[in-house]
Image 1: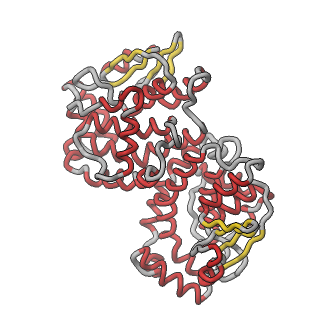
Image 2: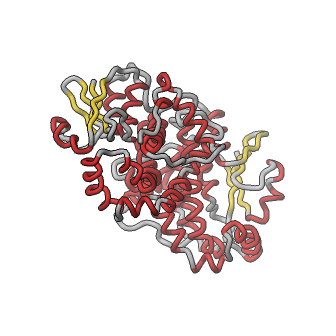
Image 3: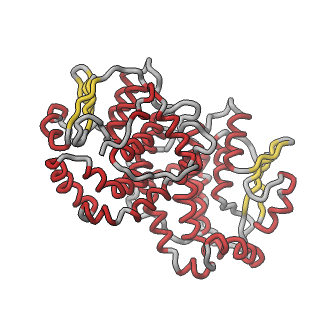
Length: 226
Length: 226
């Protein structure tokens, strides 16, 4: 199996929160995979075979699956004898949406200039052209005004901080796909931004430590790549 | 079984979003229950037997259970032969928190003056004394400035509107506890406030219609009580 991922200037460390979901799902299922690293400017050409303009793409035998949610469903349906990713697929789908706008969107605005900094020059140009219209300001303006989206992001973390006061994983005693969705977001931020997102004592920090130790400490080895 | 609920001036129609969760859970399990109606000012005395200052309280044989989450867990554990409320208890617990601060809190600020209007004079006084410190302004100021919390509430509904574009219930093909948590909030608002929360065409409206038809149309019969 091949998992196509997104890298920055270093060409080594994939940081996309959506690719992390798929990579952690593959680990959860105990499946072997090879990573194929792409920069933004290479995606269009290299993923045309899958008819996809975004990572992740999973190539399994003759099949190409794009979109992290589709990949999770594909893995669950194709490898039902492996540990289940979902206890409840509809809750997992809703969770995906509950993370998208309330958390990923303000976090993107918070760290967009940091992501810019880990890219090579050609990809910085591409990133600026495609992302500035989305955020409605320049990278430099976003750099100076990260406090407002950061506050929204932190406010929207409240349910999770509360939840982890008394639970080990969103799946209860063991992680499920929702854990990988939320953790993938924190890995993305850790790898691309020097900003510290959580305050000491936040129960989310203990959960992140537990997630860091999964799969031989895979996530725990991921550091800031800038 | 007795379920203690909260009523306004009319002494008939229980409107608490937390009581609705428990009532719908009882209906889901197909269990018989009797409703006991209380006004705010009667709660302290009438629920002292359960050592509770809030509704809902469920009395089952010699046992008294307070707090809607505890009641749901009690029903699931005590009546396992009845239809399950949870497919995944930890997701349901997290969902409770995801609704609390992002939705219930701004909706309360939006309709607090409308709730005041459906109470009798003695309870209006009690409500003002206890709720004004919580919202940090007077009932009258909240009445004039409901647009800002209303916008926050509507923005935070985004994941649900998206989700119901392609799903019947949060439980998938049939409702689960999370459906009752979200629906209880909409019943609360419908019964206490003349404000219209959703725009035409919002997929949440179709889901509410499906919820309205459950249990012989129980929720569908609930109208504005002011």
